[in-house]
Length: 66
Image 1: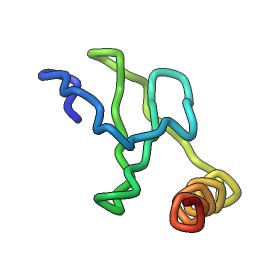
Image 2: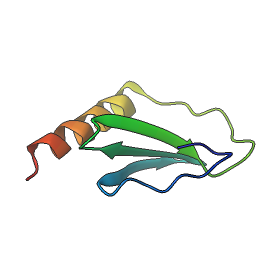
Image 3: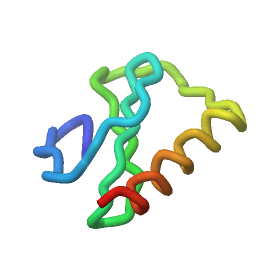
């Protein structure tokens, strides 16, 4: 997904976290984490170790869901 050419979200893409103007989503079918922004001039995003662990856990949870 690009902030300059918004793309349609994938059918199985789910937003798992929003930090300021940044949106984190994952796709089970593509096994990818997407980072997108809704702002043309977003602030720098800062993630803690716990934030990263939460994002990875969310991706793992998609793999265990049926």
